[in-house]
Length: 412
Image (tube, rainbow, N blue to C red; front, side):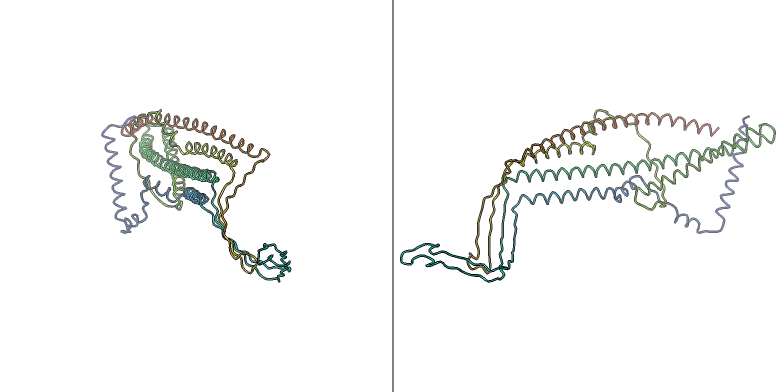
């Protein structure tokens, strides 16, 4: 049975009077420093942009991925040094543990008119054990290997690009996780606000029903039904509060903070109607998604591996300049300098290089298959998200109507 408008207005005035009385009592109580204490302990507001900035700045996974990119850069610089001449310096210190003798036969150095043979007779020179110092300095410049070295440098550059895509993927994953947790907290807050309004309504309804039961205008079962609904609403409030506490702990963990750090979230502006060009979205995803870029880079890496194996057929040709100096060897020149053109070619290898090339070509096919599979996965994911976005946009209108109806019902 509905109350008259006069009766409802009177009941509302009574409730407001008691609420005002309680408020004045709390304000007049001891502890004038209470507002200051509340200000000190009040949790700060954490916006979504701030949460994303903290997460991307303090995430260990992202830090490790960034270090991998830097390490790859160091590897590129190290590989490029192989293009330049190689300088080596060697020092040998010998000790002759046995007596050595040098024999020079008569005329071994020639027979000259007016002088005669040198030496004039067979001569034997004995040596005694002693230390001998021998030094060499060599400068070598590869020539034919420059092509292979360039391919090797290119491989290191591709590896760095792969690590860069992994870094982007990590950043996007962290961003996604932070946004999900943030939105879940907002969802919990919204649900708690709705349940709080429901609890207020049910408590007032319970007072009214109990009054009707006392005067015999309602049954006890109706009062019990309202109590059950109120208990269920209070349980829902408790569960939502616990869920939100867990959500805040998870978000704090993602931000690299103490999980007990207190904060409140800032509401997100209402959703706007979006018009999505599915074809353009697919094209953009295929061009920019980290997994697609990584798959294309893997194909390039595999193709370079084939080129590297083919480069093994090229003979090794280079130029070498060497300077030699010795000490305590009177029979040999004190120093000498030579320049040489050296070549090395592994002519017969029992088919080893052919098999290695065949292996790498199969790796190219595997990488291309992975690329095709990645394209399909990305398109499926994009189309699925577009459908979910359309469903969410349609649900907004329905939810707004339900919210308006619920408020009108509560008002009446």
